[in-house]
Length: 131
Image 1 (tube, rainbow, N blue to C red):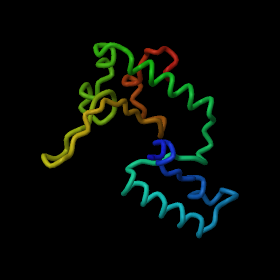
Image 2 (cartoon, rainbow, N blue to C red; image 1 turned 90 degrees about the horizontal axis):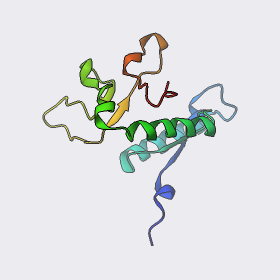
Image 3 (cartoon, helix red, strand yellow; image 1 turned 90 degrees about the vertical axis):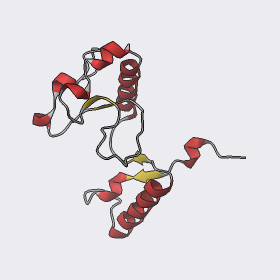
């Protein structure tokens, strides 16, 4: 019997990478870095904990993303990365090489920091609380 997918995703405590963490030690950091390397080379993903982002905020982000991706294609295209020719905005993988393996999932990529480099015209207005 296979374990549920949630049990198969490695968990990485990113607070262990910060010198200001109460749990920090060079040994703990090295252990977590090894787990991260293993996770990315085997599972290809990981769940980050210890980031300090509240569950309630993450729930709001998930809800806004769910509502955005449920919009009609025409609405989502208003924030297309093709508008600026960059890597930010709505769209699928940017092709950088003929040998590149493409992942045709659509995504919304936005820069958050530094604040002065945010491209707010690519931030959806719908749902209206997105920003």
